[in-house]
Amino acid sequence: MIRIAPLLLALFLFGCQAPPAKVTAVPPPAAAMAAPPVILISVDGLRADYLQRGVSPTINALAARGVTTAAMRPSFPSLTFPNHYTLVTGLRPDRHGIVNNNMDDPELGRFALSRREAVEDARWWTDAEPIWVTAERAGLPTATMFWPGSEAAVRGVRPGRWLPFDGQMPNTARVAQALAWLDATPRPRFLTVYFDTVDHDGHDFGPDSAEVTKAVAEVDARIADLLAGLQARGIDANIVLVADHGMAQVSNDRRILLDALVNPAAVRLVAGGAVAAINPAPGREAEARAALLRPHPHMSCHDKADVPPLLHYGRHRRVPAIICIAESGWMIWLAAPTPEQAARPLGGMHGYDPAHPDMAAAFVAAGPAFRAGAVLPPFDNVHVHPLLLRLLGLKPMATDGDAAVLAPALR
Image (cartoon, rainbow, N blue to C red):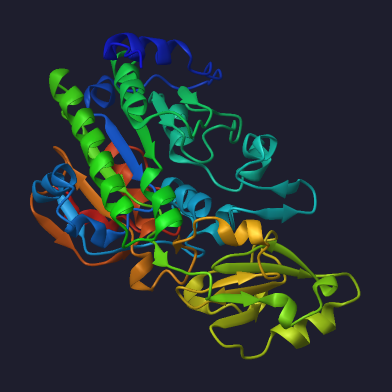
């Protein structure tokens, strides 16, 4: 294999970045530009207790000189896109509109992670303002590495620098790109970095697997590379490391099959897995509700108006009529898997009740703004956004988050 020198790789990636949109912004005060950059790192699927496996010395050292918690609770449903958007907007999915990884909208059609035209359509994201939009409007330069929502011009604004998602881009190249952005002028005041290998291996092999432990160690090494790059540049950044959710062990023999409960012709399954989002077929509403809105083993189903209040879910127009929630470790399918589906690796799943320990997400923060060695009580992830606003010197916003919750983390 031909090896590209790190500097050449970084310059290549920098040259391939998507062009920034023009933004009308008030020039920031000199003090704001001189302040430490804020780097938001997402390790997708990094369950909080993975940091106890003895393979994450870099992240654990960050926690020791900064702030951590035993559990950061995701928002419901504990899925990737809804929670990444919550982290940067301070709104729960039921308010920011990314209510699932797969959604239907009467005007916009179908949304799915693999549908590029939907992911890049700002209309899906416009119910909330992500922090890079707030920062760009305030004159603070931003750069985002694969963060959900950053590929669309939300409310007419894109990050100053960004890349379209490329799941094949190695973690080493992601770090090189982030450092190249920090070498650019103007230097980003807010930067995101995204790693998804822990989540992928969690799905394929399960949270207790050797593969997941190896993936955690590899991501930890890449974060060490990032910190070394910051040190070489004399950058003392405020780093906030988060996960979007945890992971639960699943198996092929723990499936709930909807076609055993209701005629498949009477329903449309908008999304399945840990959470099933279901719309009755026209004219068959009573049939679907009678079959589903009753007690079931390992699953509870609710009309969208009657989802348990603690889940803060059911008001948004994109939430389907019926929501079924599986017991942790179980999955909801419309029908039995085909032989091809059954042969695919399947070890872990998320999306369950955020209060379940398996869904607990990691949170670590360190830098000049943070206290050293602080351990916070468990908290909801909506409170990360007001923390980011404060680190950037931006005005508080009316969201579901409360700046007071994470205030004890700060010096």
